[in-house]
Amino acid sequence: MPLFGSDNWLYIALIGLVVGLLARLLKPGRDRMGLILTTLLGIGGALLAGYVGQHFGWYSPGEPLAYLGAVVGAILILLVVALFRRPRERRIFTSKR
Image 1 (cartoon, rainbow, N blue to C red):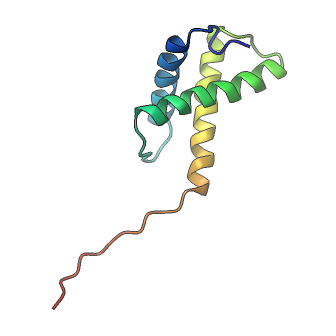
Image 2 (image 1 turned 45 degrees about the vertical axis):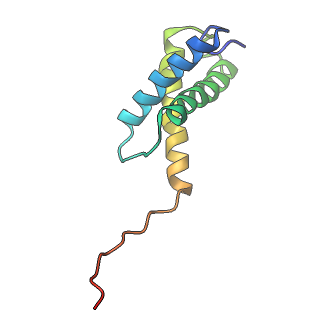
Image 3 (image 1 turned 135 degrees about the horizontal axis):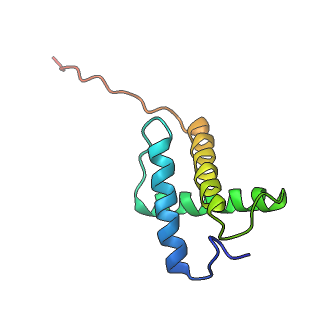
């Protein structure tokens, strides 16, 4: 099953980056991750949405709806990660006397 309708890894990484960036923009809240994790997020979202969408017969690889599904899949992955991520402790700066 070609991802994003292509077997070219450079194309897949570029589209994965775009999908990951769109997912991070559309999901509320702050997600601290670099370009590599954002690209992997987009590729993971495409895999998730591709599997579900093709299983139910909603679309085939390379269709425009598959790209929208990839963004939705990436947002779902971000939401699941946010559920399991520990909240960062806020440090209160106090002066030591």
